[in-house]
Length: 329
Image (cartoon, rainbow, N blue to C red; front, side):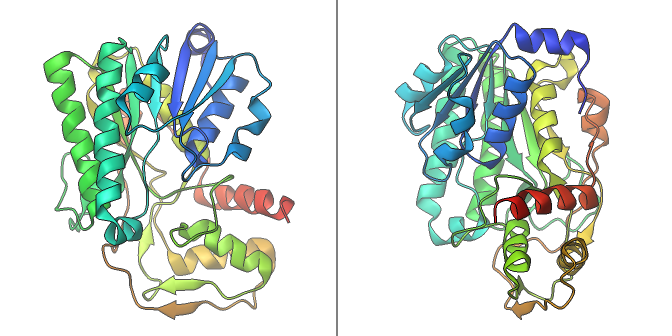
């Protein structure tokens, strides 16, 4: 992931807020900004799904600040945006199954919190907010690869919230001039992703099982495909989106992925091969409600308007992630 000198200078002379900065993707964004020499990096997180340990190593840095607060509280959002230039809005309640179990909280956090952040960005004159959108927005569309302007109907409450986020962002740009860019993540994975809890994602779950020598669960037949995206690619997209100088790139949504399609069965085989534990067998169970069958992104829009190019492919990303988890045992 390389930035030119103009981009590095812009980061060095700017202040950044990362909501959800103690979480998986957010903490990786914080780390990159600090390593690149950002003038100021502030985190807003209520630590409901994020962890203080993810940002502990940054707390001694004078450029870093942590605010424990909730995006559902408008005053917290306004306080966090005070004095900031750019916002990377990652705070949300993820997981399709979680949203099916508890649609009310998912709605309150993802829609209410997103609306509060838009208001705070408007009132605090934020230059641009990059926000976490989702490939779940494509819903029941079976068209592959996925193109930003062609979506289906959402298949879960979580997908509904992410679609509404895009609609709100568009309205705030047209009504108030709030500059935003939505990043539709495709199955982001990598270091700091939580493998524990009822709503853990598939990659850390597979990693945990293989490292412990236990059989991982696969929902369905394992033939469903995903465009797994290493977290470094998502981080790069956020940086490019926040500091873009291209006026055509604003008030848009972009697929953030690699453009490679593999099945869950193939994913497990890659992890087994990297780990050398070929004897592990998956346990198959009933498919989950709300899950998309196949997913593959067309990333040409992000390449053309943002300059986004994934720097880590799936295989290398799995190797890096495996080494991270192995070092934690």
